[in-house]
Image (cartoon, rainbow, N blue to C red; front, side):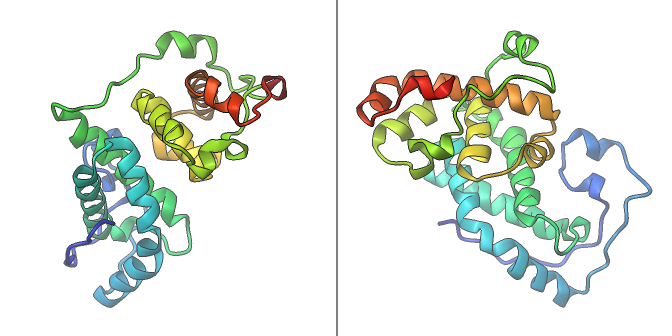
Length: 225
């Protein structure tokens, strides 16, 4: 479990400043409204909207980093940024997706620079085949109906962690955390068609790794067609 350090009030900011280092942050959008919360309201939003998601945030961070200390650091960094840029968050909207996007960008911007950076897959050739909004996904099983959703057995965790981080991320977001394609597209800053194609490929890669294990659990490959 991550420990969240004390956060201090900060000045309001625009949505385009939400994710330091993100492309959008370099292109100010003057029309983006600024929500001027009082200090008391900021803490209320933080505790009510953000803190309930801390377990999911840690699980996501751990799946990305494969290291408890790095996961804790990543979650702390995410929550500090969330408080700092809280004026760009609108109460009642999807706080979990908002936080996941910050965490994802923090991971990309900071943790990939480290020596133990996870491998980043070059899927250009994959996505030239599966780059359509109409990419076929019917024949890839939603892993929420498979063993991954329950995270049972070391084989599943090992297979998931062995995937390239970009493929691992889409499985975590969709099949474990239950985000929609639209939410994933916003979190990952990619088109919905790319979300579908990447998820399609990621599920197939994972199933290849789990083929023997899945067979022992009664997995029927024909259900995938």
